[in-house]
Image (cartoon, rainbow over all chains, first blue to last red):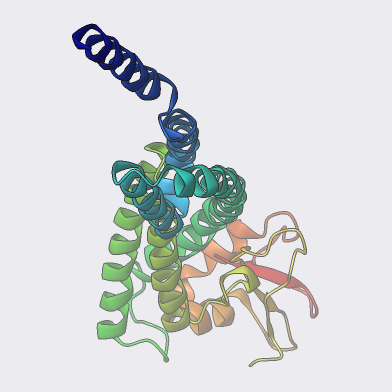
Length: 199
Length: 69
């Protein structure tokens, strides 16, 4: 009888070990699914962080939610949802690439055009600074406003170029648009025609 | 005044900020300079910017489009 009880105990113990080893309830596939999702989100981070930060934040939130489900042992849900995150991350990479291309095109246009506008203003300011009197439609105060605007535009343009060189396209374009606004205003005061591209 | 001032579009360059003045009867470089700069004595700036079409600052022709720097 005692021998039978010991035998039964051994059988139960071995069974318990086998269950623990084989029956992880889908934890392994869930782990793999999370790793794949994490890798995809990490890949998307570089460009999406710069060009589509809100979309990246949303994706990271979804990843955190899936990881939370994993922590709570809801492996079935993890395996069901994580592949969707991989797909979303891949879409985000593509969208960020498109956005980057759009911004680069905008920057190229502005960086080619703005120096022409600023150059035209500078040229006119240089000439008017030598004039014994200003044109009828330009007061000394307005001319002073143009000169300070030109100085600000020149400084902002230098900052925009620095932002571009450091890879911050969004800031570069925002600064370039500020320069454009200042230049348009100055051209209006000076009676210079505003180029079609700046309208 | 609007008829005389023409911002000539270059097509490929939407940011071209060059200002032009189309010469009308009675115009002189001095008068054009007075109008755009407030000071006729600055006419040489216009003459120098248009040396491709002007040989003599005293000779301009009706219809010529002068760059105003």
